[in-house]
Length: 231
Image (cartoon, rainbow, N blue to C red; front, side):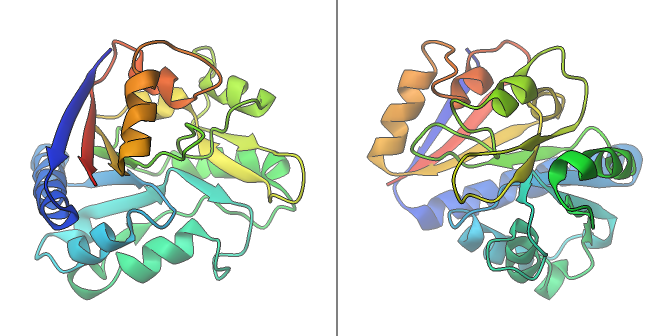
């Protein structure tokens, strides 16, 4: 297990620390290869962090960003991670960030996966930063428990950078970075709030199980996962 836990007394303090660490990582990437990249989580949790990050003076024109996962909806849809990231991060000082979409014109992520896979080759690899959140069911990115697509996306034999994820019911299909893609980055930052999620993480760090996909991220010896947590 390679989990490093950073606890903060407030969310404001957490965001300040995470901002400093992300900018330090990006600066290192730019210094080494003139460009840097990040894979960023969607959802409501990271929004305030992206807002704060967007106001920082930085060489944003040298930074590429892609989401860790995406719902197969138009980028103008309220559920789109692209809409979230563009609306909270790619503005103010960070208006010149270069964004790479995980959505194509294909009808679904199964038929669109090859196009997205080829497009991702243009992203500067490996990413300096992967920022993840976690759901109360233990999912990260769009790697949800109990799905064959999740098992395929988390397989160590899966050399693809992204994989379609389909759920039953009315939930829209998605595309997600694979576990290998997340682990083949330079840093993984995990952003979580609340006691309930902390307990889930502590449980997940003890044993790898498909019931808690985040456990596959925590129970490995490839790359440390750095947790930023506050109530």
